[in-house]
Image 1 (cartoon, each protein chain N blue to C red):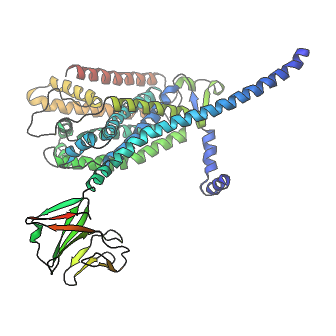
Image 2 (image 1 turned 60 degrees about the horizontal axis):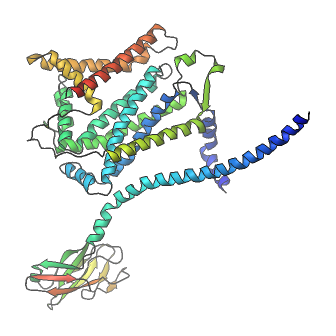
Length: 359
Length: 166
């Protein structure tokens, strides 16, 4: 019976071809194989975001009632605090996983030919992930959300010529208000997923097409000395085990450290003391502050502009890495790419710690 | 030579016992993993169910109402009606031309549309599928309604009308 059903479906959809493809697919095994899991972990947290996000949509009301509806979700709806906490925690863990994934791909030189598009689509996904974080942060409309968005939007506002009109468009006016919440809501739950999902599918399709990249040191070995395991079921089971660990970490964080809600945003109140951006924007925040300190008075705006320009340049350089370190036999250049990566990682870590120390 | 002859026997013996062992171990693992899987499904499913079901409890509590007081409703002119909320559902209070009062649930028994009072033909009418009810008893007169409307007890006081479950 089941066999006949499978046969019927197989005839029409070609399932056995897929099964054959899955059977052929292998994953390299070496001492750095652990880093292969981080793309999957990022995906897991993204799926959690989809599920918990849809659940929050059930009670969330954007606009003037935003704060009240989040307060109800947190304090009145059964397990609302847990769903919301899981959404916030999973967002943060997703950013962690995405960063680990990006740096592991970078240092394993997995961006090299023919995987350039994997790297570029991944960078796009990273940027959209951060924008997801930024837009979602405003939605509860508490004090922190309000001021974080105010500060965050002043960065694009500093851009010459287009900065002001573009930022006004995103903000729905000159000040952050319930109109901003409504806009960010539309971006957060409709526009950004609609952009994110096709890029994600493309990114995953590329992994299927090219397979996992191996380390340059593995590539130097003769074929017979390289080890690998079948994707199905061996690697998939390991992947699912990692998902299980990720789920447990998320459950512990979300239930032991539930995400709170602050006072309702009030434009007539001063910003609370010690206010600071989320950890993943801390490095950028601190660097801008440092560069800004170099310039004072009338030059302060110039300093901010310079900081943003430097950032953008760094990001472009980082994104274009496959173009100047694209070949597998790059000797000296490959080492320079590694140094560049270590420098970037070092700057991010140091400025983040510095940022927290100077709060 | 004798050693070699013995070896296969012990080997095959070992194989069967280990196979039996691995079978029971396999069954055990299967039960264990199914159990753990169910625990996870419950730990995730229960909060999600409770979360989604949250307002149901509230509305069920709101539906438990047995009496509603309509202040100033005694001033309703004869030959007219007003809609009110009885728990979660709409009710209709009618002041007839002969000075008598009727109240019933305004929810059509066919497909739950809200019915209306038509003074010119003195009937209760449901616009969704042309159902007609008797204005005093709530009996289904014509159209698709399968059952009469549920009626309430009406008590007219000096400053209000009290509607209560029969």
